[in-house]
Each structure stands twice: as C-alpha cells, then as structure tokens.
Amino acid sequence: MDETNIFIGDHIRLTEIDPKKDAEVEAQWTQDLSYARLRKKNPVRPLAPTEVRKDLDEKLKESDEGRRSFFYAMRDCLEEDSLLGFMYITEIEWKNGQGFLRLLFKNDETTALYIAEGLHLALRYVFDELNLYHICMEVYDCALLHIQAIENAKFSLEARLREITYITDAYHDRLIYGLLAEEWRISQGAER
Amino acid sequence: MSDRLQGKKVYLRAMDPEKDTEVMAVWQRDALYNRFMDSETAMMFPRDQMKEWFEKRLDYVNTFMICRVEDDRAIGFIELADFDWHSGNAWMGIGIGERENWGKGYGTEAQHILLKMAFEEWHLHRVSLAVLGYNERAVRSYEKAGFMLEGSLRGFVRRDGKIWDMHMMGILRQDWDALHQE
Image 1: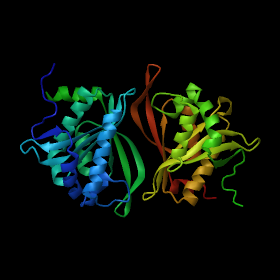
Image 2: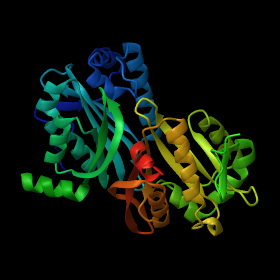
Image 3: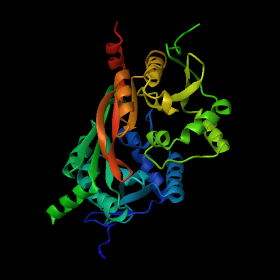
Image 4: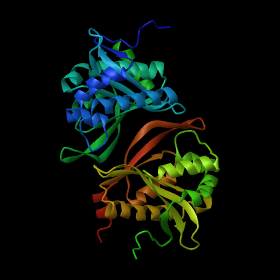
C-alpha cells in the first residue's frame, strides 16, 4: 500500500469544509462576479454568508446521504487556515465509473498559481481512491486559465455546447473536457 | 384557437400525473425503453411513488404527453427541463413508449412542435440534449428535427459488458430559423 498522504501536495492540501468559517470567507469572494458565477446559477449576484452557509450545509448533507458527490476545501499548506478554494466531485455514476470535477479558486491570481497542483491532487483522488473510469470538467470558453491547465493535464475536448450561457453581454460556449483513467496513468508514468 | 400544439400525426397536451402515471409506469417495464432513458441503473417504481415524483417535477419541468391524432392515445412524452432563462437554454427529454410506435415519425413531429414553442413562445436561445451512444434511432430523429451533434463524452455508459459514449446535441434559435425560413 502506497503510504503517500494523497490529500497533501507541495503547496496546497485538501481538507474537510468548515461550513461556518468557510462560508464567511467564500461570501466575500462572491463580491467578484467572476467567482459568484462559479457558485450561483443565473442571474449572477454576490451571496451573503448565510446563503453560502446554507448551500455548503446542503452540499455536505447530499454528500453524506448519497455518496455520489464529494466537496473539499483547498488550503495553503503553510497556513492551515488560509482558504484557497474548493474541489467538487459531483454527479458520480458508480455503475458507469463517471463523474464531474470542478476546481474553484478565489481569484485569477490564485488560479494561475495553484490550479495545476489542485488538478494533480483532485485527479489522484478521482482515479486512485474513487476508482472512476472517466472524469469530465466543464468550463466556459472564456475561462482561459482553466482551459490551459485542463489541457496541460492531458484532458481531451469532448464536446462544445454552443452559446449555452450568457456572460457579460455575450453568449459563450460550454466546453466539456474528459480524461480516462488509463490516460491519466500513462501521463503519471511519463512524469516519473 | 391556437393550433401551436397540433401536428399532422400527433399533438401535445399537458401531462397530468393523476391520469398519465399509469401508462408511463407500464412503458418502464420494457427494459429497452428504460435503458434508452437514462445512463443510470434501469429501475421500476410503485405507481404512488412515481405519481408523487411527477407532481413535484411539474413545478420546474414542462412535460407534455404526445398523443396520436387518429385515436387520441398518449404514446409518449416530451419535456423541457433545467431552464436557464437568463441564457435562454433548456434541456429536452423525449420517450415514445411502446415499440410498435417507434420509427413512425411521431417523435420527430413532437420535437418540431416543442421546438416551435421553445423558440417562438418561450423565447429560448437554445435547446440541448444528451443521448446514449447506442440509441441510434433517437440520434437520427434529433438530427431530422434540427439538432447538431456537438461532441461525445467518451465511455460514458456501461451495459451488457460494453462501453458507449454519451452524445451531446444542441439547436440554436438561428439554426431553427435557417431551417424554417420559408
């Protein structure tokens, strides 16, 4: 058995969510509409701490009851309390080995710094622990930092849903990227 | 009176859980129908449970029964769900119940009626759908109705020891207008 702590990377660690404390922080992030858009269906607007708290509580309840979704916080390794973002694995179909992954970082600067490591931790959990066969990531065509990181992680563009969302005065496509477990294992082997 | 919901072979009417649960439960007993509908485990449920589920769904899903003109019989359903009114997108689902009614153009005409509603009454910008890779008849029918294949999620469903993709399809208002200019 590999003794590696798969919840820890070089700079970030995955931990449980603290709905009360984390809601306060995340609510502040939603003042930036580009973050709020990751957290609320249209029409986009900032969220109050009580709304975020309620939503996090619901997510954790759903995870506990259904075991078809997992929600974790991503924190700075050096400062245990410093929240960097969240990792969501949702819509898992155990019978088909499928799921959807999302990484939410507090702003573009944090995304640029940590998304590659966040993806590495997330994919290790998805394939080595959850044993999924295929994982999807959905992003809008304007999320360039995410697209670059996802492509660097060897995902393939599997679908482009044309003009499916309206963001800041224009329609945008939703891109669905996918990665198979075997592709991930090959890419890991190549890294070593 | 508006004839918006009326086609040559079929017309659409509101789905009524009280009246329509029975026939929809019977369709679920055909495993093939059941396995066309969902990538998740094919299942059957007691009538009361299904009725309650349909009643709850009416709050956020627009479901119609597809009825045959010649005898008023409900032969399938068609619906739009998961509305994003802000972006003008919704997701379509459709099922024709009994095998003897498959391949007769009922579904294609029902889609035409629904898409006309979606674009010209509800002012949607786009209608989306997902279809399992082994449901080739459905893909052809969606293409006939104007949907375009926008990609395939690889190896999305496992059945009978095999692995199939999930196709993603969509039609934009401008696609619809181009198809129906005359």
